[in-house]
Figure 1 (cartoon, one colour):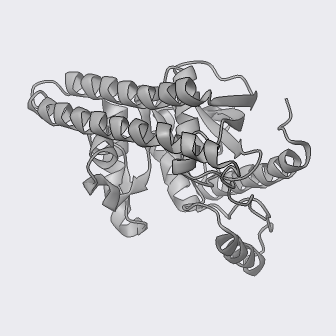
Figure 2 (tube, helix red, strand yellow):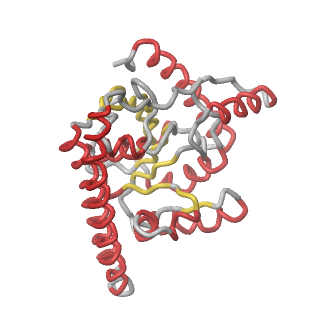
Length: 299
């Protein structure tokens, strides 16, 4: 079964301390994010003259604000990531996919990206409605993140155009995707297992059956631009935290197990890519099974 939610600390003094730090920290970060949005909007004046300058500024904005989020968690709460698996060189162009449990998955992936000098180059698949949300949504729009409506007939053209711009302008990138398409819950896990049984797929306890169509299109669309594909498995020790618990400092550590696949080792045909992704999630399920048993991923 999915890991249960992280319980709040039983000591009321610890909960109060979390609020005392979390409320002003979140208010400060949100206000600075809106300020960055204003500066990003002003950068549109440069775009018709120099797309390179426009993207360079917005990369700096993303690197600065996301870096502020990561640094705040490290300074205020001593948050850290424990990384195991394959060595990953800095500044590669990569597609990064991971299991998805809660919003802190994103913050820990940002910390890992910063360690590889790719924080400002992160791009995320996001629901289309998010681009209308001030702050995060507007910032992602300025970064050319692909927004999806979960209807492939409607999404394909816009995604192809985004990938074409990335290839044409040789934009540095870590494109992050959660192929499960949603955060795992017990109810979603039950439905996913039933789907697996109905379609002759492996039945997994700790991950959902991934959606392969978008992943296949991503590999096809970006393959000439990529160095590698990273498979990241995220594990939490005591329970899955919410973003608010992360902000209050109730979770101090996440474990990331990374597999690096040079892009030339990833299959070429559609069915083979889809099967390759299913094999990766089969491995994720085994890794998480061992993690919940032993408290760590293999070195």
